[in-house]
Amino acid sequence: MTIEQSTDTILMVRPANFGFNTETADNNVFQDDDTELSIDEIKDRAKKEFDDMVTLLESHGVHIIVIEDTNQPAKTDAIFPNNWITTHKDGSIYTFPMYSPNRRLERRADIIDTLSEKYKVVTNDSFLSYESSEQYLEGTGSMILDRPNKIIYACYSVRTDKEVLAAYGKKLGYKVVGFDAVDGDNVPYYHTNVIMTLGEHIAVLCTESIEDLDEKRAVIQSLKDTGKEIVHITREQVLAYAGNMLEVQGNEAKKLMVLSKAAYKSLSKDQLHIIENRNKIVYCNLETIEKFGGGSARCMIAEIFLPKDI
Image 1: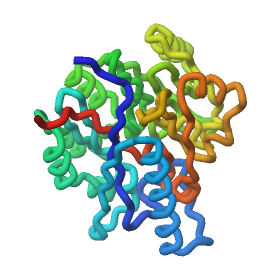
Image 2: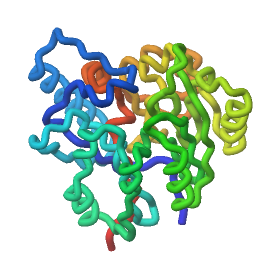
Image 3: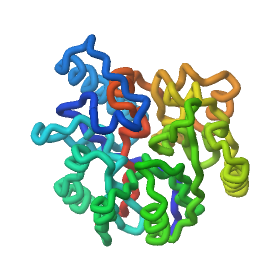
């Protein structure tokens, strides 16, 4: 069974009540509770940014399963489904323990049912029992999966527990390359996917955030051993979501690298050149979603790798 790093099919959740989440703000320094906009204005702007992103990706041949968020219970972060679900080529689905109690409402059995109707689901498993002991692992926010090489990259935080990470790695048969990563104020990054992106040929990494030299060398060596060309980004670029990209397959000769307008504008010509040698860059305005939600393009996408039901 050939395993690809990227997919042409993704799941996105159109928000009903997007907004600032006070429960996640304690360890997500990217969130900004700007009171100049009303709650309704924030919701409307987020919906437009979401719809524009869907239209853009579909125009490039990406297949998107759009799920409407339910109005009740209100879920400010439903737009970020990658934090609670992963899917795999062998027909497995996994759901994950989440730090914020109000984010746990995002896990919807009906979404899994929808996938089961469209694809061959062999395993539907979860790590939710860890929530009772306050141990969390927030999907592909917490982890960067190198699917062909069976490697998980992850920076530890309150949302990325070592024990749960090891259990997931064991379940998949993946090697775990774990490390600590901190911002300029020595605060751990809440998710790995704000500092790291992995494509078929390239890796985007905020190398300076990994201060332990042995851990830094281990990550870089693993990436080089698997043939990745590394695009090194700075902590300042991380704040512009330059690490929060995702490679997807469209109808282009090159696979797409999806990112936000802010992330694109933060990158240098040399960094863009490396990416563009391998990928077609597609970017969209996600200003509202980034500001209030503390997440960007990658966070909005749950990749679908499930086999077609025959």
